[in-house]
Amino acid sequence: MRALLINPNTTPAITAKVLAAAQAFAPDIAFTAATGRFGAAYIASRAAYAVASHAALDAWAAQHAGQDAIILACFGDPGLDALRELSDVPVVGMAEAAVHAAMQAAPRFSIVTGGAAWKPMLQDYLAARGLAHGIASIRTVEPTGATLVNAAQESVALLHETCLACIERDGAEAIVIGGAGLVAFSAPLRRMLPVPLIDGLEAAIATAGTATRLGIRAAPLRCAAADSTGLSDALAAALRCRPHH
Image (cartoon, rainbow, N blue to C red):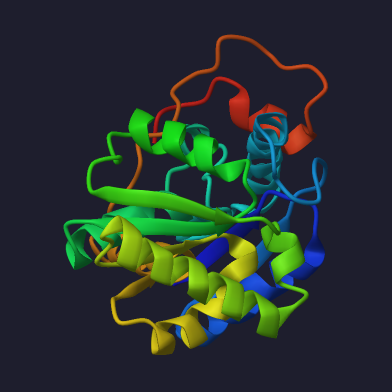
C-alpha cells in the first residue's frame, strides 16, 4: 500500500515528524509526505485554515499519482471534502478518524490539542459533520502544537495535566490527542493515563488501511464548471472537465 501524507502547513519539520511517526506505526506502508507550498507555518486561525485547504489541494494535485490512499495530516482536516471530491482513492482526515475511533472506545471522550483558537474551530467542524455527540470536552493548552513540539518534557507534563482534567472534571472515558505536531507525545501519554488514548495520525492510517483493503473508491468530480486562473498547473488540470472514473 502507498499513502500520501499531506501536511497543509508550511513547516517541513512537522512533516518530517509526522512521516517518522507514520513509518514507525505502519512500516508495511510506503509513505510519501508533502508540505504545504504556501500558507501559514502553523494553522491557528480560520483564515490560515482556509488557506491550508487550498494548500492541501495543491499538494494533492502535485503528488497524488500512484497513491492508494491520501491522509490529511492536520487535525482540523482542512480541505477534506474538497479532496474527496477530486480523489479516486480514499482520503482520510485525522480529526474525523480519531473521533470515530474514540466513539468505539468510550461513550464520552475529550479532545486535547494545542492553541486556544482550535477549540471553537473544532467545535464547529465536528458539529457540522454530526460528530459532536459524545464529546465530554475540548481542552486546549496555551502553547500551539508548533511550540509544544520543541519542548518535549515540559509538553508531556502539560498535556498530561490537561488530559487528567478531562478525565476527572469532564467525565471523559477516552482521550483524543489532536495535532500533527503532537504525534511524538502519544506514546508517553498513553502509558501515563488510566483511559484509552487515541492518536489522530494512527487512527487516520488505520482507517486508510481498512478503506484500501475493502476496495473503497471515492466518486470523483465529474466536471468543473469553468477553467481556473492563478492555480498550479496540476491543480488547474484536476479541476477541468474529465470523465467520471
